[in-house]
Image (cartoon, rainbow, N blue to C red; front, side, top):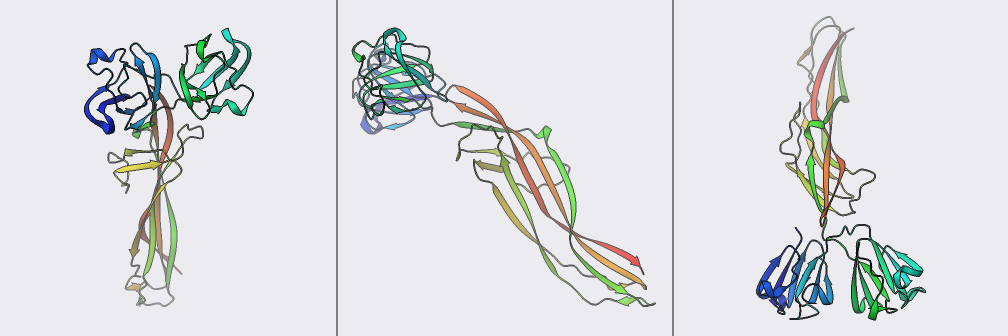
Length: 334
């Protein structure tokens, strides 16, 4: 959800209004020239001192602002709807996109180059930008948006010193587990072997009692695709409570993913392995301690929402479980 909540007084006090779409004239909302603080959720908003998106603009990205620049002087609000992921703007030294040009895709202080106070027109290929009169985001500003080319700056001509692209609000990731595409594999591994031999012709009592403690683990992890666009540290979760497989899988009901990490849970199983009370004549008795290791791989569909735009990519949920430990007995005549 992209919205702005505006307040009558500073520090989010007094009367308030919530908007999810453009407001060309706050008079019609009975909230003109009275905004002193605001909160933005999702994409940025541009606030103007006059109706119909005219007058002096200020830009507010996602966050809380306990006071605003033009206090009690905002008359219209406009939501930025562009895709802000991959911004690009071209500045031109002369009007009507003539003369030298400079292509930018990130925040830039023009004072560090040879284009300071030189721009007279621009074209925005992607995203939305803020153009500043002075360095370090200072002075008056202009808002530049994709598809709204400006052939002539008028009073802003040869006064541009700093530019920055606007950023979308917090990325929302929705994960859907595709159960119908899961794959399960099972293998059996002998982790220990204990033997007893009766060479005699009479049944022999076997009195030695052995105890072994073996550990098994359940490892849950999520693997992103090599081309993922999800940033390091991003978090999301999905439910595993509806898991249905051919075998029991000891997993958490909800699995939380953080880019760059994995969850590992280790459980310890203690099993007492005792040879039988007796071994038949001329027999070698072998007790194998066996661990069953199961791997489950399930595709997960990730819908990544930035502002008004969705992207879909896929990852994989892996669960490697090796905490099922049993014994197998084998008698061999000698």
